Every structure is written in C-alpha cells, then in structure tokens.
Image 1: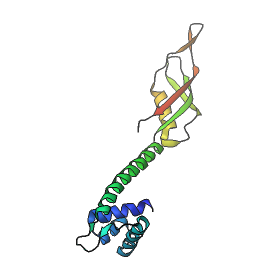
Image 2: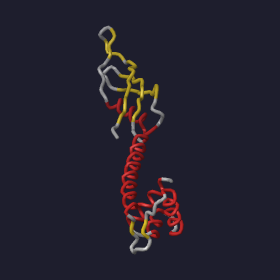
Image 3: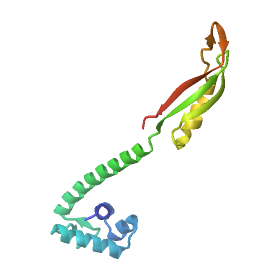
Image 4: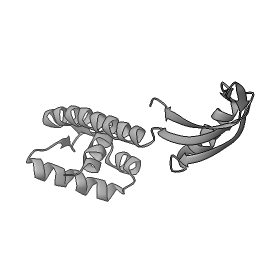
Length: 157
C-alpha cells in the first residue's frame, strides 16, 4: 500500500467517480479502478459501493476515507515542514574589515563564507560597508586597522 494509492482513494470518494479521481491523480480510469480493487484486496474489505451512482463508499470505506484524510493531512504537513527546514536561510560569514581613521569601511574581505547560498556573503559585505565603526588609535593618533567581524544570518521559517 502506497501513499499515492491512499490519495487516489480519497480523490475517488471525494469526487464520487473513479474516472475523475483517477484523472486528478494522473492515472486512467482503468488504472484507478485496479488500484482501488488492489487496496480492497489488501485490506480484505469492500470500500466502495459500485452499485450506486454517484459512487458511494461503504460504511467501512467511509471510516477508512476519514482515517486516510487525516493521515494524508499529517503526511503533507510533515513534508511541508521538511521542505521549509531545507530552505531555511541561515549561515555565518566571517570577514576582515579595514576601518579608516574616521571609522568608515575602506575594504571588506571574506575570511570564511556561507558557501554562496542565498547571497549571504554579498549581504554580509554590504552590511559591514554601511556601518560606521569606532576609529582605532595608536598613542592617541587615529589609524587604519583591520577588524574581524562575524555576521550571522538566521531568518525564521
């Protein structure tokens, strides 16, 4: 028994038609009918009353339909959560930033990047270039200095 077969069964019951349920699932009426019959054989129960039009589930079929709907909803939700987790935007970019005597950024170099995903390296450089830093001084005289900076990205999903 496969998840696609359960989805097909739910489509057939919801649409009250093997041909329309099959079409929605991307299979022929014949393939849909065979899949439902195999499901009934596997479960050893008749799920559909084929003598009535429009097609109706048997009482057992109605209960199985409700259980399948809940299972498919949970499955689809879990799959969507996995997809969202894979697309989560996060990473850390470490840079060396050259700060001038007035605190402005003259240059920024990536020491450790985020692997190029989602443009995080470029965003980190833009971020540090827009900032103003406290100027460094040596013996009271402002000087240029390289400053290590870590930029962390974590967007909620």
